[in-house]
Image (cartoon, rainbow, N blue to C red; front, side, top):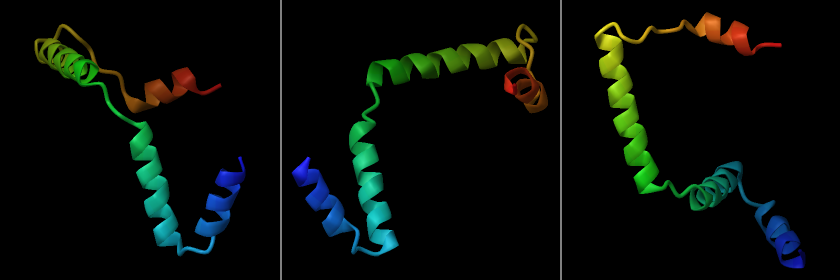
Length: 71
C-alpha cells in the first residue's frame, strides 16, 4: 500500500490532462477483450439484425426501456 500512496502523491502534482492520460492507460490495461467472446457478440448482433429486418424481432423504444428499469 505504501507504493500506491507514493504513486498517488507523485501523480497528484500532474496536470489534469496528464492524470486523465494515466487513468485511461490504467483502465485500458484492465480491459482486455476476449477475442472469442467479441466474435460471438458480432455474430449474435448480425443474427438479431437480420431477424429485425425480416420482421421476426421487434424493436423497443428508449422510453420503454427507461420506464422498465426506473424504480
